[in-house]
Amino acid sequence: MADIYQAVKISDHVYWVGAIDWAIRDFHGYTTPHGSTYNAYLVMADKITLIDTVKAPFMDEMLSRIASVVDPSKIDYIISNHSEQDHTGCLWQVAELVKPEKIFASAMGVKALGEIFHKNNSIEAVKDGQSLSLGNMDLKFMETRMIHWPDSMFSYLEKDGVLFSQDAFGMHLATFERFDDELAADMLEYEAATYYANIVLPFSPQVLKTLEKVAASGWTIKIIAPDHGPVWRKDLNFILNLYNKWARQVRVKKAVVVYATMWHSTQMMAEAIAESLAEEGIRVKLLNVDDAHRSEVLYEILEAGALLVGSPTLNNHMMPQMADVMTYMKGLKPANLIGGVFGSFGWSGESLKDLEATLAAMKVEIVADTISARHVPDDDVLGKCREMGKTVSTELKKRLSQ
Image (tube, rainbow, N blue to C red; front, side, top):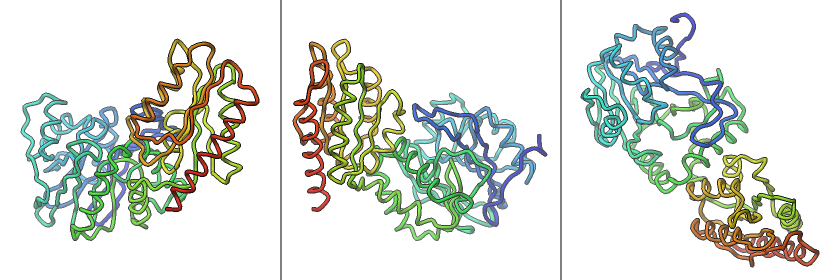
């Protein structure tokens, strides 16, 4: 297979030797319609070093890319920046094959890898701020706990100015293009935003601290090499500024109306609310969870200032597809939102209390009275829905002006 896959040189001493997964369509419940990459990097130093590996089924592809540069048995060190199996799935197989002198990970990474693989092989822990000599160049390490696992760390190759950022600054996007400047900016922003909203969002406070830590490090970063998606080499501030904005959860004049419907009654209410919001100058995204995947919902919420949710009642609860989205949303912890609740029911109406409780758990401030309709909403109920739209838009504009 050595002639099938080729490495891609990303700096004077570093090659991309990862794998492209064109087929993956789900990643922990996050839909990935454009596939993904599992990025690994080969540092051609005196001590040849492999930074991260790939998902287990793609080991041969990675080894083939390595072989296009050097015999894999020449690898001296392996660095595990992140122990999740899309980056370590073939770690032990590779280690048994190439027999590196040492494998390095953070202290939490050593613990996690032991619990994942249950091997007795010795992995050496590196500390935050520690340097590792590769002979003619050095790697430096920075712990980045909870971006997005406790074991996560960055590695920095000072000689080439390459930051190996594991899952930070990445995206799920399968392409043959390896660099940011080979792809359209709007595609990069959309894919990075979708990735952030569905993976990184709950760790936003840690992201802000890490951005400050990197800025204070004194590192001269010329290239950011994440574990998914393209390598950033042209405009690093493009992705750094986006992460700073998303991590601060800066809100804009946008509302997301998310609903489930059974006999179109809740849909009628959602449409009345959305129309009213739009008339008040609010950008609106109206999402029926029968058609919108949960990961699309989170992408739309990433910068929105208002979240309005609705569901009919089924078996004394909200609709199951709405419960799916609300549970997923709660776990990702979007902050600084205002909202409202609406829905129809036949005889009990518990869905409204379910939705209110979920928004409360998410610390979404409900700024309009909850609206309910028995069976089919009449003109009075639809009028109240329009008033909800006006109330939410007024409050959103007020908060954004402060």
